[in-house]
Length: 381
Image (tube, rainbow, N blue to C red; front, top):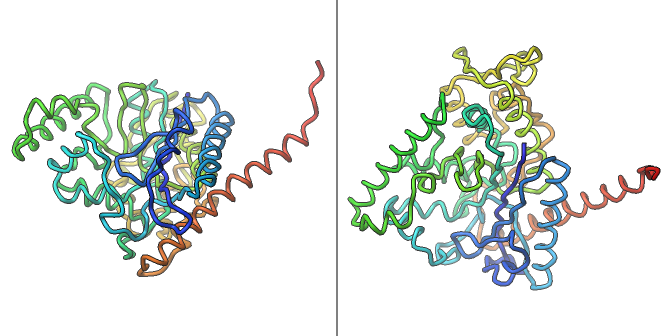
């Protein structure tokens, strides 16, 4: 199953201040601007294997990191900038962003402090893929990289709270996790309903209908944690934070494993509650049975617990183990900043520290790769 990644990083100068990427956007066609100035996105192409995906992601990030160093800039793998005033995170001039701000309302400003990771899977058994990713959703806690907003520790996983519960609270169809579907047709009906309500809300707020129609289509007017992308076409999981490449790649590999099984065997929803360690979904399919998913109510309950307490919650860890993840293999960056409050000065230091960890993560992967290459026996020609 072809898989690709998109990772968003903050850009800072050598003092830790947020700055625009400027010429970093010219490093590669796979580096894009984001909707706020001090952020960029690095993308991979669709990759057939995790080996290929690892090499491509690390290589692309490494090139941008090197270019940033030459320009006295750094990349920061944090879900929020920890502490920042609105004027430190200006919006890029873009009609669709301006319209979202008008339609969603003042809460939309919370989205601009959020940097995340998007995992794309080639569409195949689409309903099963959508449902598997829905059940997997609380796995964002494995790579949680920030608990702070405007210097205050708000919840363990700040980004999903700000993005879903705050920004899109008034428009849940646009930004919150949606229930399972029985078919692609059901998903598309739900999409049309969400688009219609979003358009009505826009018109109520004075947006010209033709202007709205020029900027938004149904597939491009939702920003849910799990969604279909028509243009690629892929099934996209948008839940994880910006994080270290090694952690993102570990998570992508584990998620891909579950989604592959669901794609091959289909899914069935159990109404008994969340899975336990003894009936983990990836172990319950030895005979080729459909992948068993917990009831959506159970997914929502665990998601709430993950947002609030992250991996500190034993039920969250139990749930993720039941899905086949290994929580102990992850080291969320958010656990490094436990202060209840962070000043602007300390936020700058923590951003630079996170940038150091990103560069060390890449160097560690490179050195491991070199040792592995030296240990191979050349094949005979």
